[in-house]
Length: 313
View (cartoon, rainbow, N blue to C red):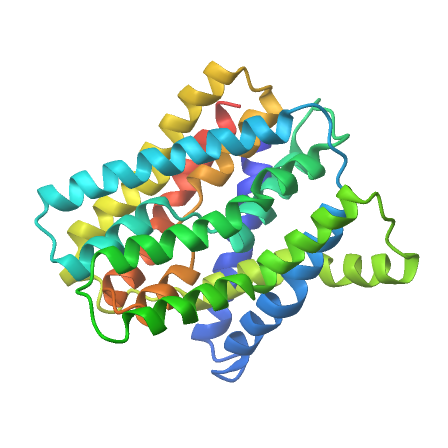
C-alpha cells in the first residue's frame, strides 16, 4: 500500500500532464513557460528554504551523498564500457554516458522523495526533509560539472571549444538551482534565520513545484523519433535506473544507512535521466537526439525501478 500511495499520485500527475497536452487544454507554449517558472522561481524557492532550514544531524546526509556519488561513478564507468561495446561514435558516447548517470533530482527526485517520506508508515519524519535536501545540495553542481567534462571529451577539439567551455561553466555557476542550494548552505553555516515573510513566500512557491513539475514532465513526453535509437537509449536507461541503484544499495549497506536514508538514496538513484541533459548535449555539440531518447525511455523504466526501491526499503 505504501508503494501505491507514493507512485499512484506520481503517475496520475504525469498522465494528466500528457493528457492536457494531447487535448490542447492549454496553448502549445504553456508548459514551456511553466518549465521556465519552475526552473527560475518555484524549484529554487523550494531548495532555498528547505536547505536554509535544514538541521544537520550526525553524518546521515554525508553517507547518503557518498552513496549517490558511488552510484554515479559506477554508472559513468559502466556507461563508457557499454558505449565501447556498442561502438558508438564519439559524439554519441558523451550523450550515452551523461544519460547513464545524471538523475532528474529537481523535477522528479525531490518531489518523489518528499512524497515517499510523507507516505512512509511508522518512520520518523524529524529531519527527513533536511536529509532529502542536504544529500543532493552538493550533487547538483557536481552533475553539471561532470556533464561538461563528459560531453566535451567525446567531441573533436575545435577553435571555439574554449569559448564553449567558458560559456557552459558560467551557465553552471549561474544555475538557479545551484545558487539556491549555495544560498541555503550559507544560512546553515552562519546560523541565519529566514525572516517570516520571506520564508512564507518561499514555502508558498515551493508548494506548487511538485505538482507543476510532474505535470510538465507528462506534457513533455513524446515517442517520436525513438525507434532508430532504441538500443543505445535502452542500454543507457537501464544503467541509469537499474545498475546505479544496485551499486548504491550495496554501498549503502556497507555504510550502514538507516531505512529512511536508504530510501532517499535509492529513489534519487532510480530517477530517470534529467531533462537538462538535452540542453547540455545540444549546447556542447553532442548527440542531442540520443539524449532525448534516453530521457523518454528512462522515464518509463523509472516507474518499476522506483517501485522496487520503495518496496525494499
